[in-house]
Every structure is written in C-alpha cells, then in structure tokens.
Image (cartoon, rainbow over all chains, first blue to last red; front, side, top):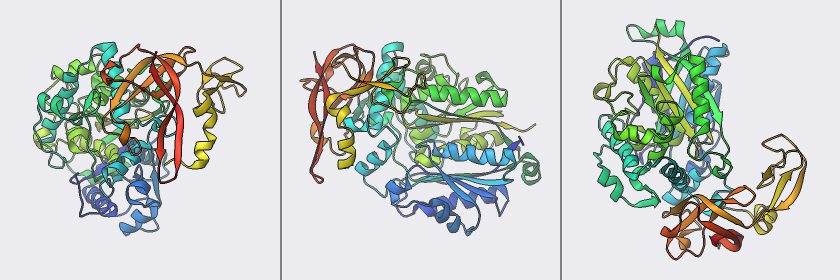
Length: 387
Length: 131
C-alpha cells in the first residue's frame, strides 16, 4: 500500500442555507479543497451523501456534481452508509490512492436537509434505522439513542446532567468555530430545561438538521510534499470500517457501540497506534449519549467512564484528550453525508496548527470517528503529521 | 410509507408472531432470515413467539414521526421474551408513561399500530401491556 496524504481541505459555513442548492454548497466546498491543495485536476471524485433522493428529489449525484464542477468525464462515485456516508467516501478515496488505482482523489460529503419540512426530514433520517422492524412501531432516531441512554444509565449510573455536559462542552467549542451552525453558550440547565424529545434526551441533547458540504483532496505523500511548501503534511495512517446489527433488539449489549469498537481496533492496528497516542479526537455526537459511548468504544475511557470524563473536563479543549474541538455535530451542525468529511477536515486543520482559538496545542496525531444510524456502521480514521 | 405489498408480506410476523428456529443451532430469529446469524444454517422450523416477557430498555417518544401523532407520548421498549428473543414494541395501556421501567413484566397483545388514511391501510401488529 502507498502512503496517503490529505493535501487540501474545503470547509464552508454549515447552517440553514436556504439560498443555496445541494450542488452549489457541494461545489463551493469542492473548489475550496482543490484551491487549498493547489491542484486543478483529479483522477476520481467520491461523494458521501445519505439521501439526496428523499431530501432534494435528486439521485445520480456522480454525474450531477462532476458536471457542476466542470469536470464531466472524470470518474465519480457516490457512496452511502447513512450518517457515515462521508467517512465511507474518505475511506473509498484512501483505498484508491493507497492501492495505486488513483493518484489524486477529491473526497466530498454533502447533505441538503432543509428543502423538506421537519416531518419529511425525520422520515428521511429514519430510513437509516430498520424500517420494517423498528420504524414500523413509531420509533425515531432520538428514540433509538434514548434507548441506548436508558441502558447506559441503568448499567453505569450515567446521569442526564452528565449528558448535558457534552452539549455544554461542544457548544463552547462551537463558539470558537466560525463555520459552526450555532454560536450559542449553553448551560446544563438550558439542556435539562429544553423540550423532551425522547426520554431521557432533550432537544439540546440532539444535533440539528443542517445544510452543508465538506471536501478534502487526497494524494500520495510524495506529491503532497511537493504541493505543501512549508505546511505540515498530514497523512492518513489508519482506516477502519465495521458494521453491527441494524436493529437494537438484536444487539447483545445495548451499552456499547460494537461497530465503533471494531472500526477503531482496525484503524489502530493499521496505524500501529493506541488510544493513549492521540492528541485530538472528533467523534460522532449526533446525540450527547453517542459521544459518551463513542469515546468508550474507541478506547479513550473504560466502559462506563465516558460520561464522568466529560463532567470532569477531561475532553474539553484544555483537557487531557480534547474531543470535538470543532463543536461536534451538536454545535457545528450535522449535514449527515458531509459529517465524516468535515470531521477529517477538522483534524487536518488541528494537525496543521491552523485551528485558531480552538487549536489543541502541539497536536500531531488525531482520530475521526463517523457513525451510521444507531451504530449499524462506523468508520474510524487516524491522521498524523508526516515525519 | 408502507405499501400494500409489503404490509401483506409481513402478516405472518405481525399477526401471528411467527419466527424461525435454526434447525442446526437452535437460535430463534424474528423476523425469519435466509441464513442463521449464529451458525450459518439455512434450515429453520417455523415457531410462534411466546407472549410473555420483560422490558430491557425503553423510551417515550414525545416528537413522533408521521402516522403516530395521535398516539403521542408514545412509549416504546425493547422486550425480552421468555425464549430470549428480543423485539421492539410499543407499550400500550399505560395511564402514566413514567410507570415504564426496566424489568417491568409485559404481555404481547394484538393491536392496531398505525394507519395510513391516504392509502386506506391499517397496520396491525403487537403491543406490549403491563402484565
């Protein structure tokens, strides 16, 4: 396998972008990444997008988006793994460059979620769960994570206050990220007093509906060194992908995210790293409980200690291992197909030392964890500054 | 959005709680599947799930999806049945949703789950009630 570097990133504002279409927000981030990389042609475009069919009534994004970029003719491929579609697009691009099938790949993620109303958006997101054996009974996505939260609380004594601390931390980080959807200071009381969505999860335990896109350019380390000038070259040293049962009812243990654990184990093995080596981490906090369970599954904390770690400040920007310095899905926003790519873009920004006020000082090794549905799939990447 | 074809296809599981017991290793699958997820076996005995069980985890959905707005707040649980099979079901007949707790003994009853007025379809299945 060849070593693979991230040589360009494209991150624009996330939010309710009513004036812009899917193809516009996508192309803006794609051009930003190409410009950041200093390349004007690529061998492949990968696109992570969960459900353009349900959100904007458009399939066939490979042609639509290559065309929008003025690159009709270039190979393009849309991949889907629900909310982990972006991470899967990154892994697909990584595999292409590592294998030698492509030299330079434009990896993108996008979701345009506000062209439909709330009920239709809820339905579209719900298709990431088992529609026949879960959706049939009226369960929602917050409801599925609420069930995981209840099980975690029962086994480990995790509290609503501890979950609220995740939202407080991520909103505090989001205040420092100019691209974040929400720039809000949120207190534990704000979270606990917000509307109950699915017991025990409040509105402020949930990530929002967001329009957004993100892109990164991958190439060989040799070419990246030529293109990067004085900037640090960031490489992808580990990539792990895993699945779990689609229904929660078929999981033996409702207090762990097995797909996340497996994906992380595979990424650590490829990179020759362990959790203690990490300096900065982005995890898939679609709900506050998801961040707690993800940090346990990737080995930052023992099972049952993820919630107290947040309350104790271990994962804050100044903590032992900063988690979601970008603000996470919670504050930065969660355009589902874009999230996995945006996470990687944040880690690259941190490893380059270009994160401004939210910079984790001296970070040279980072991890990004993306997750589909209620943990039915997960993708983990480890990124490092090349020596 | 459940089509008449899909609704009809699922009658054996929804109406009669039919499940598949692997003839090789004995694992019970609800719904039935093509190959056993434990041993890979492909021959199954058609069995009926027991109706008694207990709540393993739960939530109360306060912001419902389309089709369930008239049933809000909507208690939903994962229930472990007497034979160890776990299924997701609504909890019916609760005067106060806060009664719901882990370990609560429940019994499955045949109920209307939701309906699609536009398509003229009514979807039946099982809900769990406190036993």
